[in-house]
Image (cartoon, rainbow, N blue to C red; front, top):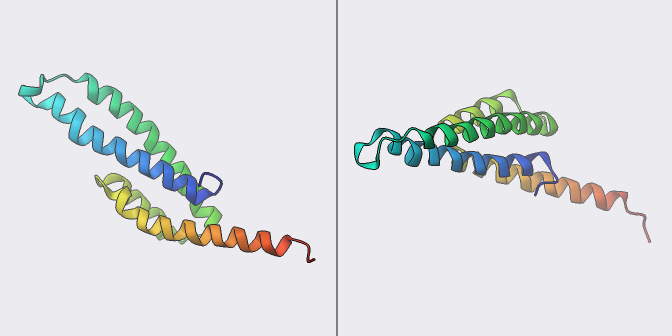
Length: 117
């Protein structure tokens, strides 16, 4: 899966989506809910990791965008998916189809390059 631009984008999108959910539904409640101790440290650390993953998501998204020659609206859809909690998991339906197409194209190209026997 990591051998293709869309495959890498799918993996990064999944990890970025998990980090967003951890930030919004675990770290932030720990920071803001009195019962949980009001500790800001989890938001600092999870937020820092999430920020790095978001930048990696954007870079992988643009790489897939140019490698697959998607229209620019896919960049917009990918960005919207990244800012909505759980959006990357919904966007994965599109990415999975694109990954399957990409893989089929690679297999077809490999078969064409084989010498005939």
